[in-house]
Length: 209
Ligand SMILES: C[S@@+](CC[C@H](N)C(=O)[O-])C[C@H]1O[C@@H](n2cnc3c(N)ncnc32)[C@H](O)[C@@H]1O
Image 1 (cartoon, rainbow, N blue to C red):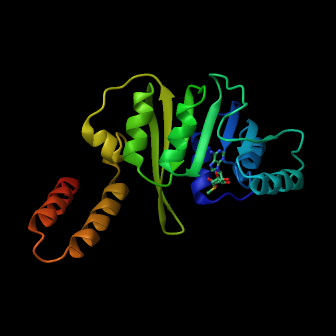
Image 2 (tube, rainbow, N blue to C red; image 1 turned 120 degrees about the horizontal axis):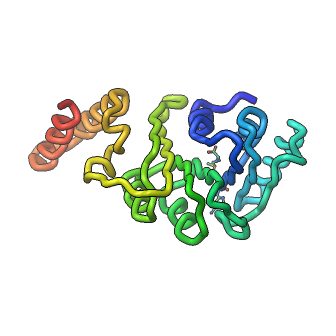
């Protein structure tokens, strides 16, 4: 089973031997990989029946029908979550992820890769009683991704930690990515918008130093 670079990075954050609940499994590639390589017992869920049928087909192809449970459901509804489980949510937007997290019983370990608004994700999940244990930044097929592992517990954070990530703020590849991104924005700001230009120049300066 060859995973995408992004899902391979998600897999590196999953604890060996633990039960995994993969919310929004789609094709269930992650569950197949974790069952074969990480000794995880997986529950693969999706809200979309077509996605789940596809997941079932793939699971059958790898002869794992008896090992991976599949469930058609919205988020974690109807799943008896244990504190010990690893909950994985990857490939959705922050608002959908937060809706799922806020309306269900959760475990002590959340591994999350959101498509957008990472600052809000960090803020909200931390306010739910978690801290950031690991963060990964990577490019997969030229698209940037961030994957965060949250554990139950408390750590004090500064504003910059929510914005850039307490671990990623020291990651050179991530900082360079942001510098390029903000430089592109800066170059596209129309003449006359001095204050906006100044704001981006300041952000770039702070990222460089
Ligand atoms: C882009 S796919 C990501 C699949 C896989 N997790 C990955 O990262 O490659 C998003 C999946 O989440 C599912 N999904 C969206 N909202 C959901 C919800 N509230 N509960 C469960 N699954 C959901 C979609 O049906 C879709 O299959």
